[in-house]
Image 1 (cartoon, rainbow, N blue to C red):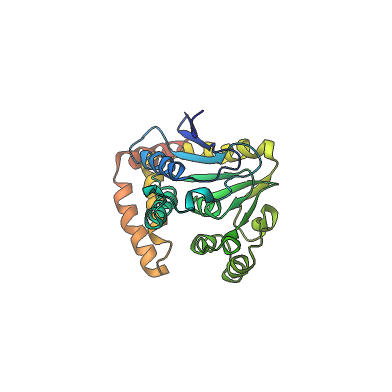
Image 2 (image 1 turned 90 degrees about the vertical axis):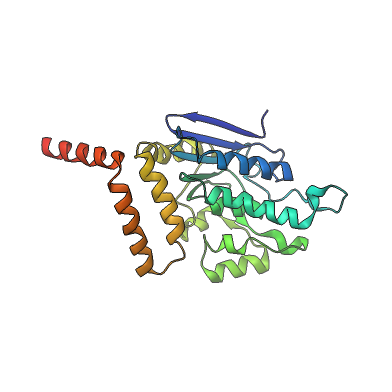
Length: 252
C-alpha cells in the first residue's frame, strides 16, 4: 500500500496518510508529503484537497523519534531534518488549492503543525491537539499552534504539553465541526463538494491572496485584495461566471 493514498474525483482530491501504527513522520514521509502537495500547483484536475489519515489511533503522532537519533544517515542530520520539516508544513500551507484537514485522531507535534497548515479543520470526536515536544527535549510548533488558538492558550499548551480535545478546540474556532469518526470523511466531503464547484482560477487566486494577507494590516491587505480582484475579473472564467449569474438572476 502506498504511504499516501490519493483519490481524485470531480475536482476533489482525498489524500490519506498511511504510516502505521500512528502516522508518525519519517524523512521519507516528509518528502512524500512535499512532493504530493507541490504537484497540485500543476494539476488542474483538482480544486480542493481533503487531507486525512488511516486508522483511528492518530491523525499524526508527530515525528518518528527513531529518525531523530544520531546515525551516519545524512537524512538524520539536524539541519536537513529542520529544513525538511519546514517544507512539509509549507507545502500544505502554500498548496495551490484549499486544503481541508479531516482530523481522525490525535494531532501531536508535527501532526499539529500539519493540521494548522490546512485551510480549515473538521475533526472526529476522538481527535485532540497537542505539543508534547517539551516532554522529549524538543521545541517547535508554537507558530503553527497560534494559528489555531489565542496566545495564552498557545503558551499554556507549550509549557504543559496539555492536549486540547476537539470539542474544546471548536469553541476557539480552531475546528469548524466535530463529528463521529464514521461521519468524518462524509462531512469533510460536503465542504469539499461545495468548493470543488467554484471557478478554478478564483480558488487558486483566493488561496494565494489569503496566504499573502494573513499577516498584513487591514489597509494593505484590502489594497492587495483589490489588485487581485482586478486581475481575476478580467479572466475568461470570471467573465463567464458573471454572465451566468446575471442570466440566472434575470430568469427569477
